[in-house]
Image 1 (tube, helix red, strand yellow):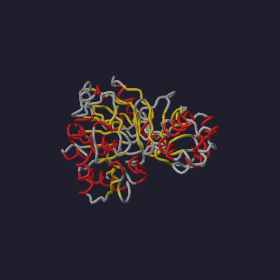
Image 2: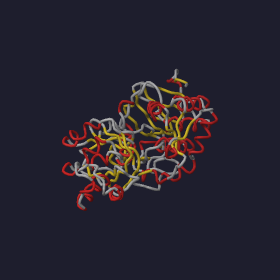
Image 3: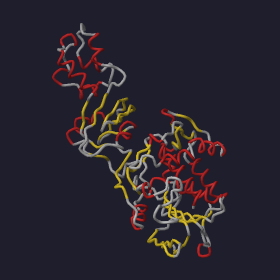
Image 4: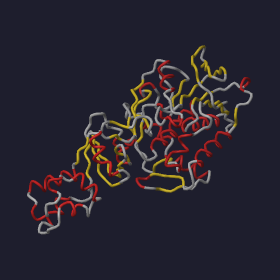
Length: 398
């Protein structure tokens, strides 16, 4: 990584604001085209989100990449970028740098060692392209005059013909996340889709929090539904609500006041099972506890019928039990907000940007890449792949 020592005499062709996944990819690619690149970031070092992603193992892409895994008010926007720089391209880059990886469920790819390998790879690519970096630098204003962008910062003034906004989103502030990219876009008259937390745990209301508090730490496989969206994965009870892959995925669609429906036994029809055992004296709760955790059964099964022997269950009670297990209803109070969110739904409107070049359709030379745009991937490496793809595209045209 090359720090920009003689900053006053360096005249970049391209300034990239944001040294995250998309910014580093863009810098490396633009540098290969013999562009002089300056990357500016307010953090003290690059790639903070890369380092923590995937629990420190970096879920860097997904074998099953498809535009259906992305959500935007312009649903076709992602197709060009992810078809021109694919998961296979990034995998080839990782293999070139001898990074060993493994496939987990649903096609997710993780580093075997650590996320540091992905960050080191990107920085090595930037080094080969002679990219310059400036850290701990706050952007205080941006303007455009005579075809040049004028950037005011805490370390002085800079100019360039091309400017890339790869600042990310407000998701997960502990990594330095801010809304700077949105503010810059607004200043240039671009439309912003109101951002909301995505891939984020849900918070229960007070009554439900009390009722489910004993389950904190319990993980179980479920089917979860909200707004006609359905996901099958693991759910985790927390001291404040619900988390786990199934919940993070459904949070992309959840709005305050929504009902979520949970099937706690997604692979078995409990009604059919009980009908086969109708002659047994075993109490309902004890029987159900053979299929789901006992403390969960105690909470979700109607208290009035928990101790009834299977052979004494009425048709109505059997139907109640079926709904308790397969159609359990909850009304979360909301989400944990940006502080716990892995991503954001919303951002710079994709209608304002070329899907081929990532350049603003209104402001020549102004580019956007990564999470700052109104593109949100589902859980599983899709958001990092969007960073690689969009950063690569911008890097070809800046």
